[in-house]
Length: 301
Image (cartoon, rainbow, N blue to C red; front, side, top):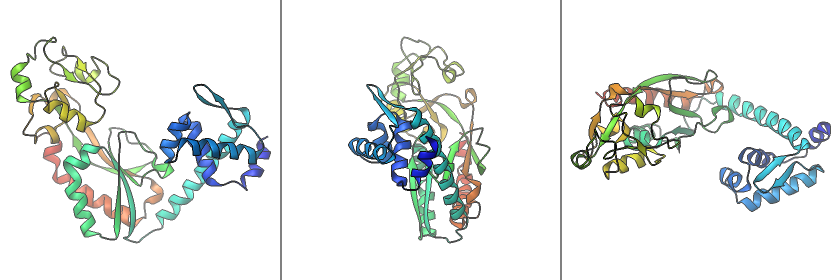
């Protein structure tokens, strides 16, 4: 069967392979369509046509989603190999680009872009008008090997071994609440006060247990830091926030010291195949210098 698939792959559209990979990874046509930027009906139709051209059934349609058939498993192995080789070629070609022009796709969390680095990004754009920044905001880790972004600004103590980069700062966190919340709630009483929750929705996650108020539960799930800021301003509870946000916000006061929480290293990362790409190197150097100027803010000093 695999020989039949490999033979037919010469006649395949890479777009069909991408949609097949998206569906196998997402599990449903709706999620796959959202990730691929097309309608779910387009996904279903293209996969049906893909199977017809191959002459094999790749996926079983189940009530909860899709499941790979044995032929689909073989197809997935071949498709991932093709995907890997294409990404490698793209990275090598990008790595030979010595022009200070073109697009740079940068990923970071929303709060770093909106509350700290936008003036520096604007300055970079003014300094290098032929370089276009595409800013990708999200909390999920993108795959630089698959060219999902060119540069990632990540808060991590363990950057991936296969990436190159430099540590550009450290980011501290503390507990913040509105003055009215502190006035109207007893922070010693678990029945009166609470943390603002995020992540999996645990009442007493590790960061709460190591805080200065380990007896206060975390309530709710607010997935982005921007949402947590607004919740803290509105008096929903104590927010576990980056110090560069909380310390500068006139509507918040620090109620739990940063010494109770770990700091996170900030890294500018990219794939080693892009080492010689001039516009990426210029961007990394520029932003590293900019972030260094914010060191006191980032460290909560």
